[in-house]
Each structure stands twice: as C-alpha cells, then as structure tokens.
Length: 222
Image 1 (tube, one colour):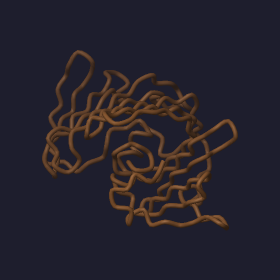
Image 2 (cartoon, one colour; image 1 turned 90 degrees about the vertical axis):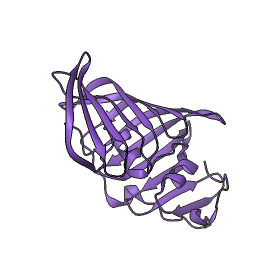
Image 3 (cartoon, helix red, strand yellow; image 1 turned 60 degrees about the vertical axis):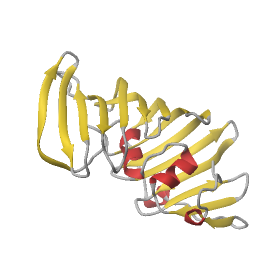
C-alpha cells in the first residue's frame, strides 16, 4: 500500500562524475506524474520545479526567469539534476518502484531478504523488485538492459508509519549515467489538499518566460 499523494520535507543529495550538491526541499506529489519541488533557503523558496503530467515548469526567483517545456528526462535533469522522466521521479518520491509495461507472467522467487519479482519489459530489459517478507513493502528495484531508460537501481529504507501507511523516509537511487541520488524525508504529511494549481506556475509580472525545449544542451537551469 502507498499514498497516492502527500507533502513532504526532505533533503536531496546528488553526485555524479561532474558535480555534486545537496538541497533542502518541500515536496508535493500525486500519482502518477504530478510533482512540485521547492528548493528552500532560510528565507523561503528560491527555485521551484513543477509538473502536471503534460508540462514541466521551473521558476528561478533570483534570476526572475520561468522555464516551460516538455516533462522529458532531459528537462527534468536540467532543473533537478535527477536524470529521470517525470513519472519515474514521481514514483521514487512516493517510495515506489517504477510502473512499466511488462510481458507475460512475472517470475517470483523467495530469497533471504524477501521476495524477488522479475518481469521482462516490453521495451527490452528486465525489471526486478525485492519485497520484504511479511509487510511486502519494496526494498529495492532495478532495471537492467533497457534500451529506453538505461540501467537503474533504487533502494527504499527507514520505513515509518504515516497515518497507518508504511512509507520509506530514505530513497537512494543509482540512475542512468551513474549518478547517485539520496532523498531523505524529515517529515511527511498524508492528509493534504493538493489542487491543480500546486503543479503549475504562472509567470509573475516582470518575470521572463523561456522555452526550455529551445535551449538545446545549454546548462541553463538549477
């Protein structure tokens, strides 16, 4: 069982061969692909990334620029440093394995740390998920050999009860390209009202609007 939507307070840490960093965040998420991430300072949000399923926006308050574009993995990486499509990022934020189309019947095997569920993906490769015995909460998930998404691994830990639902408060991921990401929640709020406005941003007066899809390989962004 998982929450379809919630708000959370977290710290994101990421590292790759080229860069590393960390940020305090306020997060809102709703299945399957709606997210809002506010990058926080002691004085409030400095940068916000939001996606409503069809559009990604990134608002840089310091530079007074609002970027708009498709919710592709390339654009998500540019503004969050997480190289994942929005639906995969939303699954990770919720502490879940990715939801992907698979072929045939999955293979389920018992192992020392739980039950391993393995399925062949429609786009090629394998999806493997390990569930804890008893609670059946996911402990890890991996994609190998996929031509579409590349190799990926996530680990879910530090489960705590949130309104009767066990949720991981630490999510670690090794992403395509070798980047490492850790999302550690300090608090999660279950019963929150999230309207459509939470997942989109209109440009305030005096803010320049930029089409992020026109930037090519520019490093503009967060």
